[in-house]
Image (tube, rainbow, N blue to C red):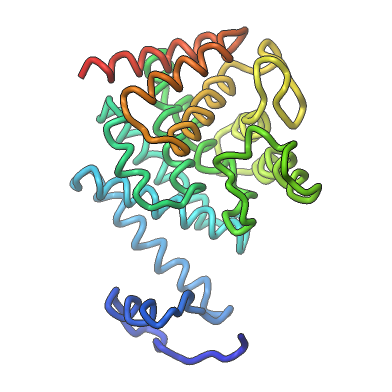
Length: 295
């Protein structure tokens, strides 16, 4: 646990062959010294930026892989070093690329298999929610860059204070935090909208309103959500759009996503969210699904 072997010298190039060699030996992690970390981050950020800028020239699978790599970078950087200038730059570039992708590719459901192939809930869920939230907004004719950017940034960051390492099936328990959890686990889940929102409250470099959308993202129309137990008419319309996209994204993650299951999930959500400020966003979701099913 405390022995380290130098594998790569500073400035040396390495490739997937080297990584696979050690993966076959059950080496799970490479480490980098603390004083070299920022240089490494900037180098990796440069690779991501280059990949994002070239995204329009790639096929769909490569674009989605680039977006997932960016989401992974964002989450891991915030977890380890906080909200740095590098994080803000990658968030903004990923958001621009994601919004452009959704505008260009109208039927997002056909790409679900590509999104879900990595099997990392937080990263895939964040990206899928970004695609769905911006797609729903388009159906509602809420197409200003400011609106789409707010939804997309929120999607990338809303679970930023959760990690898969807590060992819980997050995709299944985020709606029901009362059964089968210890007090520590329950508190972690219950408070994550508050802790994530606080990170972006007044933070320069992010669109306004992202913090309160994050704060509200587990509220429900009937007041049974958390952390504040708000009801449909108390939740702002843009947050309602995001909530619908977020919960629909989790439904798709936990079940086989096909036309039949998508329509079934939509009916479940329609019965629950046809209230107050949620009605407009629900109409956007149903319209998007209806157009997709005709293809």
